[in-house]
Length: 301
Image (cartoon, rainbow, N blue to C red; front, top):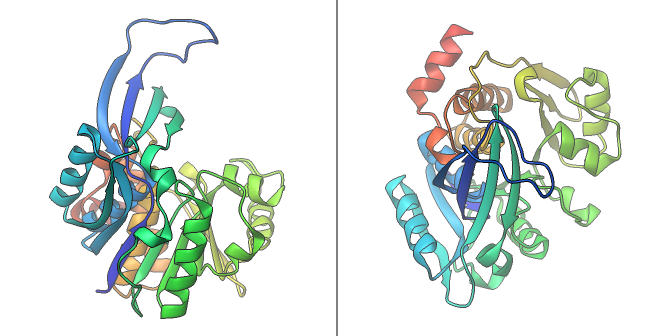
């Protein structure tokens, strides 16, 4: 199995559960709160490690209580943290996550994530590794590292989340782009929703520019689009508690399975099953499933 290297964000998630979201200017009582490790990069690294990949994290945290706890948490999850920089002049990233009836709304204060640069990376990509990226660190850093990884012969996966302005040339450097229907609509300008017809989703995916594009569609599953074909992978039944981190679970599990030698469709189906397991528990990293859980979900399909 080759190494999965995740370059991205590391946050502390402040998860607030309530019966409804407050209106502008309104205060509501009766909510519950939890502090949970998060950040799309950290989530994806932990998902890869849970899927038994040799996972490594590259990113930045502040020299504060949240930063020290997050680095320790990554190590406890068997994620290599030598590439996580501690910045004395920045706070650790924080995400405020409002959860209502299983759906979530997220506001992020990037902190140290916004200061992560290519110069902070002290190790070079290696042929055969899988390098994973998102859009919660500076785009300039992401592009520079993708170029390095591609030149070294590593596989590159970009999760286009959250959607930010980026140069069109970036996606041509990516082996696999992963995005949900909202991000697909944002990046292509197509009218894509969770209920869009498969042909419309495929047509939008073909505008992305990467060698492979995977559209994740929640309960509907995922659609894998290459230059030759498009394959729809049906979703798995799940009792939804919290969708936070489901997309990250998909990406991390996908990278892990690809690094183990699985085919693209085998890896995507495994990732689909892993993501369906993750929505049945609260929080992002606490919900990342074990291989045994995913195998059971696949066996019941």
